[in-house]
Length: 275
Image (cartoon, rainbow, N blue to C red; front, side, top):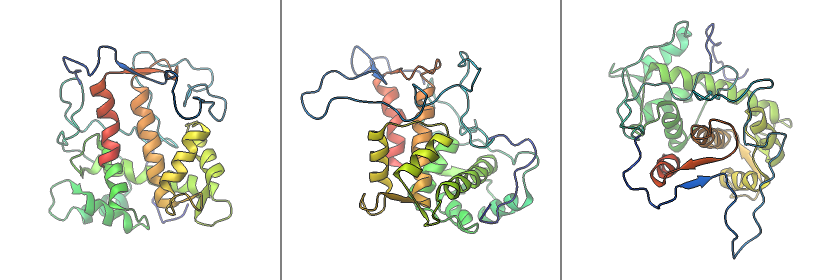
């Protein structure tokens, strides 16, 4: 595995709705929209076998009482639980609670965090995290760093503690390995087909239309090369993974359909736009 990463420690696994919704009937994601007067007819045949954008492991029934984490390669759940919920929804600006490194965390990971935490507060901000990742040959834009922080803390406070930092560190290690596996020509980029395969390996089956949108969005040439470099691949994975996990919170039966109030829908999507 490239980048000089330490190995995983043993056993390291990967609000109340408003009184009045926007409309009388809540918004239902996943259901076919009403006929549109403009554009092409709605079509959402996904790649791969799953009928939903994710599926339960073979031989297992979808969970009914709790949500299954979607880590990569045994990585920890995205939401570490180190934030204070506000009512039924977690506030996007809730403050983080202090955390500690998981048992068995590689000393190099601990040292990397402590070097970035120059004031000894137990937290590092977005620029400090950006510098810390750069020291391991992981250079990202501030937007990508902030999206990482949001997904691993579920807040937009732009601070991260030891527990969340460790989750970020090992998840990036796994995602780099996936990128390199599908970058078969070693060009430093993956095309649309390779991106589709990479997302499938992560458990996400997206339609051709969504795939084209992702490539257009995350291709640095604005879609001309139809290929994505590593740093944008990470942002793409974070977006697909984060939105899918938010959707799954409302889709406990893995049916590919979920019902959202207007407030819940806005709180789901907006953090990905303002990261």
